[in-house]
Amino acid sequence: MFKLPDLPYDYEALEPTVSADTLHFHHDKHHKAYVDKTNELAEKAGLTGKSLEEVVREASRSGDKKLFNNAAQAWNHAFFWQCMAPGGKSCTGQLKAAIEKTFGSVDQFKDAFVEEGVGHFASGWVWLVTGSEGLKVISTHDADDTLVKDGLFPLLVCDLWEHAYYLDYQNDRKGFLKAWLDKAANYAFAEQQMFAADGKGEGFRYGQETAGQSQPAQGAPSQQPQA
Ligand code: MN3
Image 1: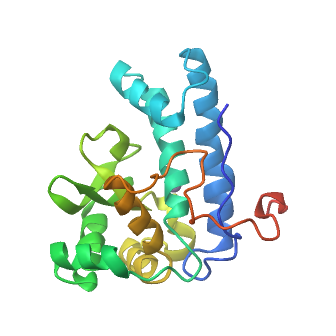
Image 2: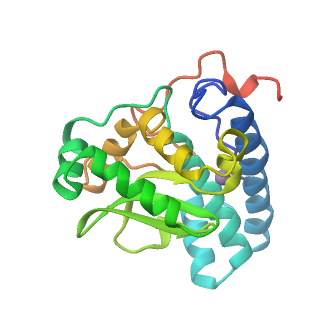
């Protein structure tokens, strides 16, 4: 049984960039529904005891679209929570160097990320990934994710589904993405992922904390009353 992971920060911690209302709906309702449905469908598919990564890949291989959509969404959201931190984490060190090499500057990377996200039709995800060609910004549709893209390793993702920003930004996806990159994105996590892609350290895996990234729960956010 997969457990809905706690947010690695309080619900209010990302305000005003991402409101507590948005996080309550997004985490407690949307993400929870994907996890619950995954548990139900994975059991039916005989995949009990597999990791979520294995379930996503197996569902993709076998063409079980319903399971794939729910399992991939469960994974993508868990990864997405790690991609944010209160006030954001600035882009420094080796990640900054790699971004400058590929995009010219951090600002040019942000422009590329916003452009990809704004240009993406309907629901999906915008990613910074690394692969054999180095860093790249891509987007995926609906639940699709990098677990089933050979040779790509995710560093950072932002949710483009309207439920991710509509309460706070209405139809202004561009405004959401710009604020998100400047004030919420966790570049320290992205850098850890980049190291992991190079074989240095563990990358994110569902249900396991990434070393040094997730903060011990202060005030036990999982115990907060639901709004
Ligand atoms: Mn979402």
